[in-house]
Amino acid sequence: MHISSRVRDINESITLKLNARAMELSELGKNIYNLTAGQLPFRPMNEFVEQIKNELNFLKSFQYSPVPGFKELRKKVIAYIEKTRKIELGPLGEKFDCIISNGGKHSLANALWALVDPGDEVIILAPYWVSYPQLIKFCRGVPIVVQSGPFENFTPNIEDIKKAISEKTKLIIVNSPNNPAGIHYSKEWMKEFAQLLKDNPHLSIISDEIYFEVAYFDPGPTYFYQYYPELLERTLIIDGISKALASTGLRIGYSIGPKEIIEAMSKLQGQTTSGANSLMQRALTQVDFDLIPHFMTPIRNHLRHNAQLVQDVFRNAGLAKSWYQSTSAFYFLVDFSNAPLMNSYREDKDDRTDYSEKIAEDLLNEHAIAIVPGEDFGAPNSARISLVLEAGPLKEALLLVVNFMKKGPTRQ
Ligand SMILES: Cc1ncc(COP(=O)(O)O)c(C=O)c1O
Image (tube, rainbow, N blue to C red; front, side, top):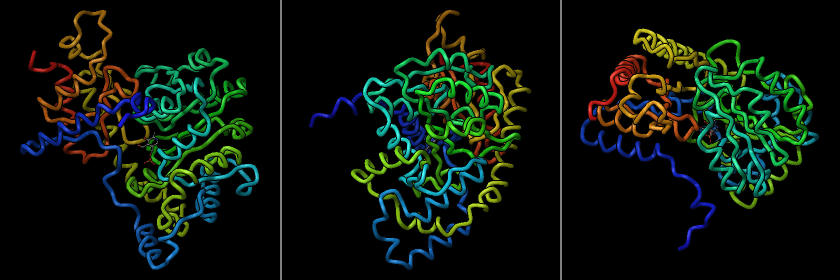
């Protein structure tokens, strides 16, 4: 069969290749430090689990849901977003609406298919989540990347974003808290960003807020639309239960935005996947969302503790230049570009090649540490490490990583 050019043009993640090698080593009896996790190793809160059990008693839990999701849940999601983001959206379906999809990734895919025409430019802020450029390319849109690095706390300069805007720019995607940097953009940045959006009325915005509840450092995340609520008229907020309820496998995501875009996404969803999982939607309708921050407290404490551990290990190793303050999500992005190990990879001082995949391979083969190379995130010569491990093994792995950063690989 002939595979479509749309799908052929999508890149496969290099992480998959490394994961396969990690599995191979594991099967050979090697103890692997797996720092690749993008999910919490905890069970969701009991109240949610009990509601799932309870809803198993009803036939409706096994039947189709309405395409955009059950009304009760959509109302509840709108109320939760209004309360936690301190905004007003009004009654469901009047000016703003909500659609439930099969996870945040599905919400994003629906949104991009509904918004992006071939040739449209979509601005993404590096480091960015791996799926953004691939989904944009699938729509035959053009990803325009604005860079940032550890010295600016992985926060792109507003002037650089301004320069990236053209008359072809349709959309900008902003992800705060950010995967893979593990930071949320500051209040000041959001304020400036809001002004930029106000000055460019032809732009639509996707605000990917999937890690909203996973911020462990004050002040917490703020958003551009809180400064100019009229920006909500061209903003789609994406959230879901994968991170906030530690439920990546249950596949529920939400999109909240102007009625017209939700209608378009619903039309598409109706012809592709239909409504999301009825059992989960019905259980969620019964869950008190006010319990989420309470559920998150020990998780946030765990992440804060591990973020402090990263700081201590990097400082003690004399690698302070590769350290920045992570504040949210589950990740820390290690920047190798100023570390001594680069001498083992670069051919000369002007060599700008991205060696992140090679570095990840060497770390895995020599020290049994699995990390995610920065290449897929638009962050060259870096790697994402996950902060969800227990502190003991995390510290052991970090000590091996910093040693590697100082000495480089043993193979030459
Ligand atoms: C930035 C970002 N957005 C969206 C998602 C999608 O999450 P899910 O499809 O599990 O809801 C993820 C998952 O890792 C993510 O990191």
